[in-house]
Length: 105
Image 1: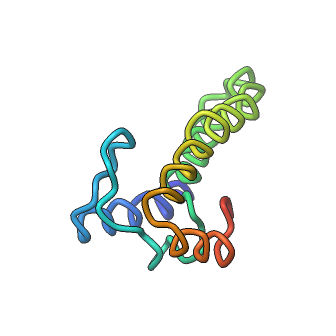
Image 2: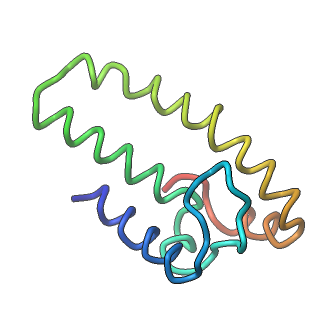
């Protein structure tokens, strides 16, 4: 449920603003309102909570052990390159947003 608290509002906001959730397509606008005013990466945060919940429900301890690895992969291979792109695309607007809102919760 915690994952859905992050994912549903973030997806709804992307649909409302007609922005793309596909990371290889260019962003048409910077998301800074709603759930994005609390966390810069609510979709990734929500997915990690869902992953953690499923691991606990099904009792896959090896999945819990791999959770830190998944966090590192998401951080270094997805979030950091995405932040570089957003800095280029939105400049000071994104830099100001980064100063106000944390990357994770």
